[in-house]
Amino acid sequence: MPRNVKIVEVGPRDGLQNEKTLVSTDVKAALINRLSDAGFVNIEAASFVSPKWVPQMADGADVMARITRRPGTQYSVLTPNMKGFEAAVAAGAEEVVIFGAASEAFSQRNINCAIAESIARFEPVAAAAKEAGLRLRGSISCSLGCPYQGEVPVHSVADVVRRMRELGCDEIDIADTIGVGTPVKVQEVMRAAAAEFPIERLSGHFHDTYGQALPNILASLEVGVGIFHASVAGLGGCPYAKGATGNVATEDVLYMLHGMGLYTGIDLDDVVRAGDLISQAIGRSNNSRVGKALLTKWASGPN
Image 1 (spheres, rainbow, N blue to C red):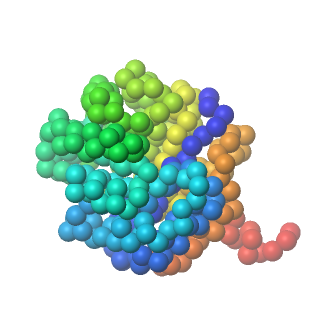
Image 2 (spheres, rainbow, N blue to C red):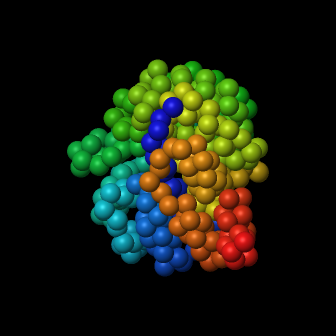
């Protein structure tokens, strides 16, 4: 089991993109700055996709311009095509993220093409990222199940991992987009992915729809995975998967990892305060159990 764990904070992008109420650029920048100060080494800050499809992310360039960059923190952006890549470079992104799916049905519904075609579309983006000296991360949706086709064969996940490896990805996310995975299946998928790509550069991206995200993180740790995605205050969801909740709350992940004696380099209390900030700013409940517990404890004063 890895003793040092990297947490990729995805709340500012994956979390906020599904909020129906538009969040101001100032609030997004303030959230990212709080998270930077908390000690994250990787934060998904923005997405350079068509505002027609994701209006919440239309201010990506402004967000990137307003944040205070912390030395040692990589600020990632989602880039589906060369137009998005060029915007990412102009905005000073250190890492670009491309995304595919392990499910043919999801790929067709999400980006209107087959898996093979979706990977081919990313070839110029991947080549340009390498030429520019940027980190390239690949994310594989529906690795544990699909809202349209149900079960996703393990070999399908491994095949997309291989394709993304061939694109030159530095890191690859195994994403349980609708949160249906359970520990034994997660370990099976992670082992299959590790046969195609170094396990130390695989990451787990678990949504918590069925309350399995923390057990799935523990199961992944047991087979050697040491990178996980989490979303402050449990922000997020998936517009293509009805009922799917956001990524597991960062506060809950940190509480578990720190309780296991694992090192993250992140200050839990600072993350709790960041989660409270964004929850109040957008007028929604805080979905982190740890966040709510600590906020209640702090409000009650000394015992």
